[in-house]
Image (cartoon, rainbow, N blue to C red; front, side, top):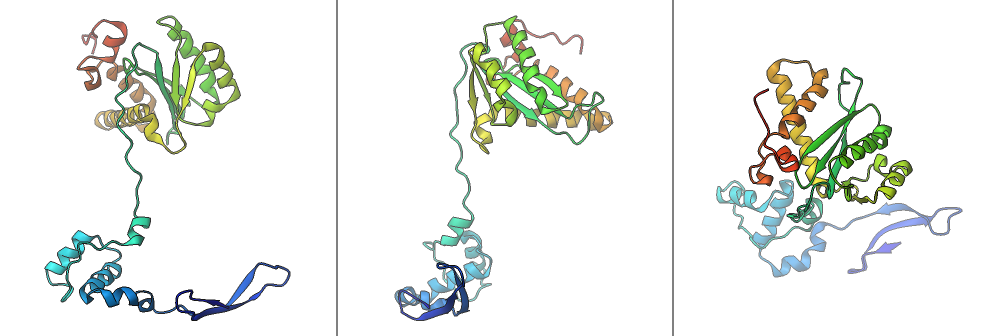
Length: 277
């Protein structure tokens, strides 16, 4: 038998399961009425406070402001508003993640920090048979490079090609920031970073905001590419060409993060030309 620790009342009975010294099977259960648990609180509080709490539960844990609105309209009868009422269930069931602190850090030189992430699989395969793409963003200039992939396993060879391109422009990459996806944790990829002297910064699982620069870039690319396809009446399987066009254009558009300058202008030192557009 087990009891209510406060009142000593028998709440239920059970028996020990055969062959298990610590497992019991419940035979009967009698839960006390809710008023028994709140009797002490009810005796020291007014009926209006209890009524406010009951209406809160009856209406599916309605928030206090909307519940007060119903009370002011007279929809719930003679009920008083209890501004100090707090529901433990609401605190546990409706809790949300706290916002991340705003980061205002900025790389001092090109390729000091590269943001990277893989997007996909796409709902449609491109004309070239690709379902994924990976982007690399220079934190200093916000210049973006995009590479298309058929499989996640192609990331290592693509990154090697990207690094060779970087060597023709600047010094080696110092920091590569990405999520904790398996393609960034592979042995081949990590072994390539080691002789390059590149530090891998990995975000925590599920913490997309820690890699927010590239996550926001994904949204910008996809939304703009979708707009191009819709407005031009182009079939969806041309999304690869649309995303490539968007990356080309974004690198030539003024950015508020760069005080009105374009990513290509910051990286290469010359303003873009728009004559060919």
